[in-house]
Amino acid sequence: MESKLLVIDASVAGAASEKEHPRSSACRKTLDSALAICHRIVFCKKLLQEWKEHKGRYASCWLDSMLARRKVQMPKDTDQPQNELPAGVQLNEKELEAYKKDSHLLEVALTSDKIIITLDDNLIDICRKIRKYSAIRFINPEKEPDAVCGL
Image 1 (cartoon, rainbow, N blue to C red):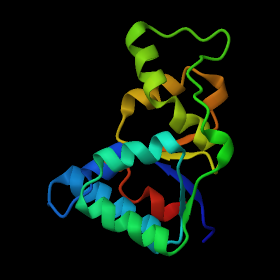
Image 2: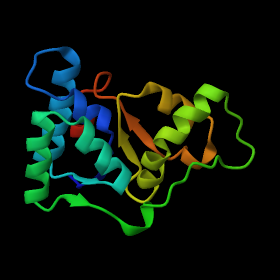
Image 3: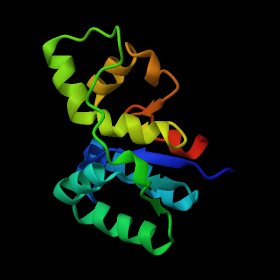
């Protein structure tokens, strides 16, 4: 199985825990699968800061394991904010706010294997309206708990 370079949203880091709640279990399983299958993760500065703010103990240990195995990358060219919508794209105010909040995930994904793991269905819906991001594959651990295994 080929190793992939994944973007993992802080929402997944915040939800992953030892609890047996379905969301916690799904996120934990996704993180564990990424580690076991030898996938790598990519961060920009903003995403890493979000992880620091939202990750729980489980995700913190998981990230330490990824760092120890040298499976974390931070490309230099993804640190510029990309909040501007591509020309011709129309979003309502709520969608635009959500886009600006998470545009860094999209830009980082474009520099990697174009895979974002997130719990944010709003982001997924917004990106369906923007051709620039049509090649990005979104995985919601709650809806596709085994998807990382099949990458």
